[in-house]
Length: 126
Image 1 (tube, one colour):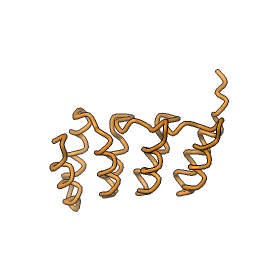
Image 2: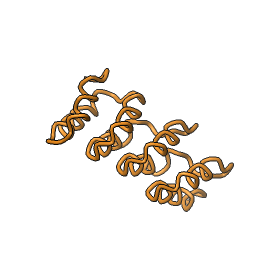
Image 3: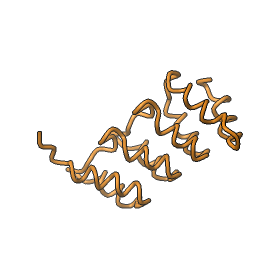
Image 4: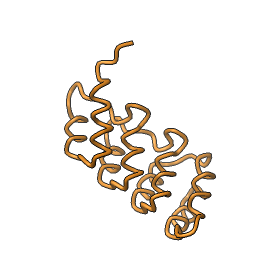
C-alpha cells in the first residue's frame, strides 16, 4: 500500500531527533504534510527521549497530536529515564491512563531520579 506522506513522515521524525523544531512546524503546517501522530508517534518519542521540551509542546498541541499513552507510554518512560522534568509534566497533563503508570514508577524509583519520582507520586494518576 502506497502512503503519499511516507517520506515526509520520516522527515518529521528525523527533524524531531535533530532538534530542528522549525522544520517540524513547517512539515506539520503543510497542507499535504505528515500528521504529528504519524509512525506511531515516533517524533514525540524522540523529542521526549532527547529532552526537547519545546518540540514536545508543539507536537502535543498539534491538531493531530499523538496520544500521550501511545506505545504504552514510552514517551513518559523516555522522559523519566532522561530526567526531563518539564516534559514529564507536559505528558502527565495529557492524561495518561493508569495502566501506563507501573513501569514509569519503576524507572523513577532508580537512584538519582528523586525529582521525577516526586512529580509522578504527586500526580493525579498515583
